[in-house]
Image 1 (cartoon, rainbow, N blue to C red):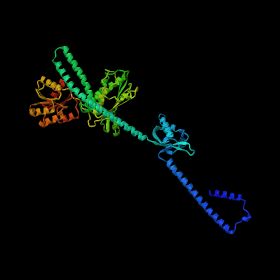
Image 2: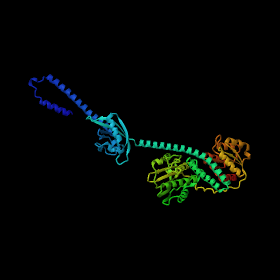
Image 3: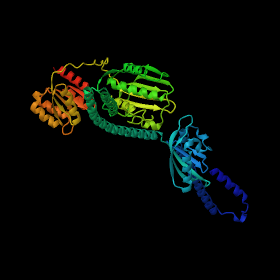
Image 4: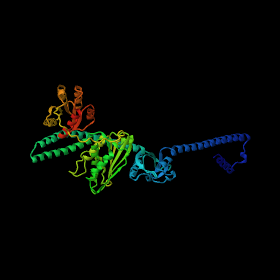
Length: 569
């Protein structure tokens, strides 16, 4: 810049030919002029130095701009009012997976998922109409990669020519969106668990009350049948018993759903159980349905109730049969799966990290819609016509698996079949499952003195009638407190107590412990409309002799009494 200024000054001086001889300067004036010229020269040199420093500062500012703009960890894009990209930094190019130089002149919508482009159009229109900063969240496209979630923050501005532009800040929020989705799924699972627990409590309470009533219906029908000679009347009594047994089956499924249906806790070989269930299914499904067994698990023993687990497998098999009216393939497959803490958290129930037997039951049937899957395990929910199903099969399966500290899931697509996946914790302590006891034939009983404790008068009277018909002496109590008063006075005269677990005033647990305080050798048989729960198991561990679930038949009660009194004697 200084050399250029000098050149221009010299040219101007040569062009000036107006200096006349009479205007020749004196020595003093020349000296002053030279001084002034020297001062001006110094001023020009200083100005040149300032210009050079300004140039250095400008280059440094440009470098800082490069660091702040191009190397920023967040994407910056300038977009015209027509939606074309004018400028973008390196972070924006990296987000979109393209070279930076290729972005200029392209529409920003090229990098937005088609279904989300309307969001961007509304966002841009509102920005230019209002002038106020705008923000939106949408899915963007990355070259050769899956779409990602982005948040766009935009402000209106003008370029050097005064044309309106849009400054856009672009941030990848995929991880945040995934975390939000995981949280929503977790909350939905929690709501589902709470809903199923609430339904389970209601179902369990209903089943308990029904079982008390069914005990009376079945028991008195048995007594009536035994005393009738008329064939026609005996048939009526048998019809009552049949209807009551069907009702008892329904309440048993309700109890299974309510997770109150596990009667035994023994080692069970699931490969053996699956094979038995498949053998039963072969005789009850359409011959056009091909059964396939893929038993790949190298550890197969779980702890539970073999009857309940087999019923669960049969329910799944029959459900698959109904989904394949024209035939298909039904596959039972096992393998060992390790569930970590994160996987356990995704399943309702009480799963703990560890090794599980994974059992899948897959059919090639018509599948299920998302709406059906939402209600699949709810009691009394069914897609079958009226009279073709109770809606309790899968509900019972859900409860049974949960009661075995496992989990069950269902995946299905309409027209593509359904897969149920069951996880059951492996029992590593048991080398081989125990075999069920053979049926016990009740011996002829000595005459017993029995205290029957039950708050249901119908049940109390029935048990008394059954025992008295067999020649036993019976005393009754309507609640635990009354029973304790009787036991305190007559415990030496009593051979057995039949004790209901669920009673007002004083329940079976406290009543048993009160009796044990009076007589440590108290002989008690527990009874309940629920099945064996943790409370009943605790009393059995404390010395109760056995458990009979309601509704029970006369022969079931007498057989159990025979077993426990035989053991005691």
